[in-house]
Length: 284
DNA sequence: CACCATGTTCCTTG
DNA sequence: CCAAGGAACATGGT
Image (cartoon, rainbow, N blue to C red):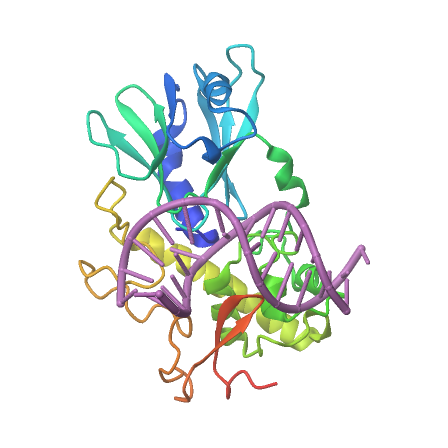
């Protein structure tokens, strides 16, 4: 599921449901999902503690855990990878096919399901220390964005994906923000002047906060196996009512008309990732 | 069979 | 040190 807006919507949804709940047991079904401990020790490290905080940082979910069973208060990081989902399931209910980890909360299971198993749950919270600034933070200024780009000769699209430069932007919203800012994806990041940096700053905030606002109003299916949350990007869920459609302006729209000028959207490849832009609106 | 996919990390090469 | 490219991880959709 994951880019900043999706993780934010998920965290807002889960916070009131998780805070104060006690972890009674842990089942690790996919050993590689948990780090840095072996599954058994990972389970011991969680069991008996309560959730005392739930935040988002970049694309990470940050679980605050109470002290317990000899462990101090500490943080557990969750990352959804490409296909990870996290949801509460009332007991009893069948677990989805690709369930990686289950936390027993008593009347509910907190299920971490992940088809491709790229997601992780890790106690190595130091990863947060090198993350770049939050683009939606109130104190995030155009100067901060300029700082994240300064000195880089990388294409701006590639630079936006660097989590240590700016936290939370992924492949979809990078293309979307550059379209809104009318900046060519291949422009060297450090060569953007104040005018374009300003436009990008505004575009990032508009695109990301717009996606959060959208995700917050859609009737989401948080429950288990049905598969679709109806939250994400494409709006390809056939059960959707059309609200999803037309959400993304250029991503995955190669060959379709630019919503601003009608020219055919082009797909290119940068750093191995598909990149979408309008060759007229985003000319170099 | 081919190629694509919301992400990250590691490795090699220049 | 920086940058770029490729592979790996793993499964499913088209």
